[in-house]
Length: 467
Image (cartoon, rainbow, N blue to C red):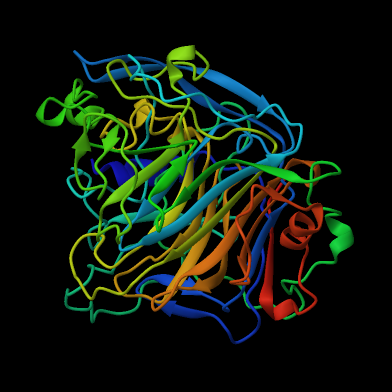
């Protein structure tokens, strides 16, 4: 049976837990190629993280059989599991000009060690951002689709055949069948996320929340220190390692052991991101091309044993952990007009680092903690070729995503911040003023401004996660 159908049936059979979301401003909802959009905003906040839960942590990968073992991993903490180490992912067409990671001054997340050798283990995952050569195809017409939107898990029959396909002129699909998905320990594995049903239009459930709902967005007093920085114009990088998924190709570090079940392991990325390299390279000052994915992790090797289980033979580096962390980035997403799988569909997202360190694009979902909710945070993602709207979604337990969107920066770069604030159980994505500097330290007032809701409710969207 099609894996998508199996996932859909699992979600239908094992439901529980009501959810809380955010409604569109009345009259703003628009459906485009199977996905619903509300209003353009400059900031999106995810609040009310549950703080407890569990997922299936990979403990062994058997390359001979393509099978994996796991154990139930319980987590707790204000942002858990997003407080665990995260990797950053950039899919073209995207031009990355600057990237920086900050922590509160005096935190335990100091500057990473010098570059280490590749490890003999690693972690991974398969999710919606399918790799170009992945055997998992896009949803076919007639397939059951299960998706999470505005905190609600729903299912429907897919009728979108993809770019360039003739539209389905049959009768419109019936209203989505709403289901629920358990967020308790022992819940069934979640299906890969795709497009969304229409969210409710309710003028009485607007986006704006008062700042008193969250308080300050910082983890304490004092400035925040920059721990890693990349600048494309100067060709410099400190504290980062650039990776991709070509492990074991042409004798390069990494592995293909386990075949399609695991997918290729992580590898050092070439400067253009299109192939593997024999050692760490700095990302070139050029556009990451369509459907090319570059992964950014720290420069601290997992050889220290601190990453947990990692895929044997793979290249493995630490991600960015902690309850309080800030990512600043400057980027653009040029429109190329290309067609085909993932063409002209740029995306920026984060994963629990265990996902790329094991099996991000394998065909066996039991080899990735993603399916049990270890965490993915879509920051700026276009869902169909050429779209000028970028959506955000949080995949964990509970899952949910704002139906508001950011305008895709096609012509010039923008600066953006992603602030994860453990003190207030919230995560913030904000478009910044172009005057924002990526200095070695940032004043507390800058952090507070990033985490503060706008006075203009039309510029800011708040999505409350279920508890």
